[in-house]
Length: 61
Image (cartoon, rainbow, N blue to C red; front, side, top):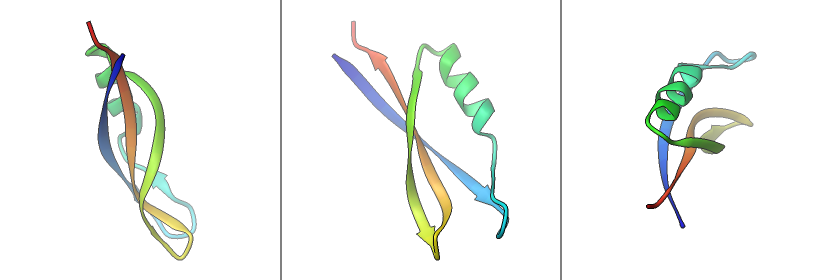
């Protein structure tokens, strides 16, 4: 059985989006035993993703 947590990250830009701090978030979570499993767009406008949740899982003891 697994438990899941989500962490919000934000994008910058208009034509070329840049995700802020995603590598740091994934590395920090990995140090705490979480595994990155995917992402979910949470805010979209005109086809552009403004915010997304990174999804992490950890096996329950």
